[in-house]
Length: 186
Image (cartoon, rainbow, N blue to C red; front, side, top):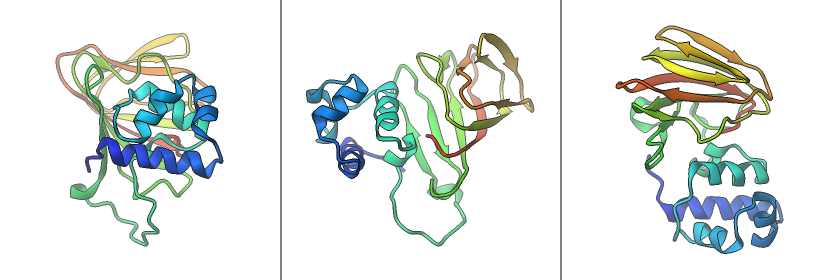
């Protein structure tokens, strides 16, 4: 499911208004200029992943909520051809696919694909909840806290709440990771 800039901007504006923030208040909370936020909300700017994370954190919503429709679906099955997908442009080129039907439950399942010689974020990130990840294919360098660990196909890791982490693909092949996060934070 591709989301264009206008739909992304509308979603951000919807959550901002729901929080009773004006653009200036959101700018202060995110350290992103009011003019940039306005451009994002009007679909005139394509925000970076880090900017989206700042906005999501300030609005206290999972990052993926900007990319999912908030319908009240009774369908508990997510079909392979209808997954919600986020593809980030260079330099990250990452792809996230939501495996759970939506973000309404206590847990989310996501498939992450990291292209060769790229990483999940510029700087390590922190979740308020717990994350468990399983390497479906490839080898990946995981910065977890102050440690660096290499995980290979079939390896898994539990990342406790509040622990900084970052995934880095230093290989020539795409890496595929499936992970669960509770509560949903993406």
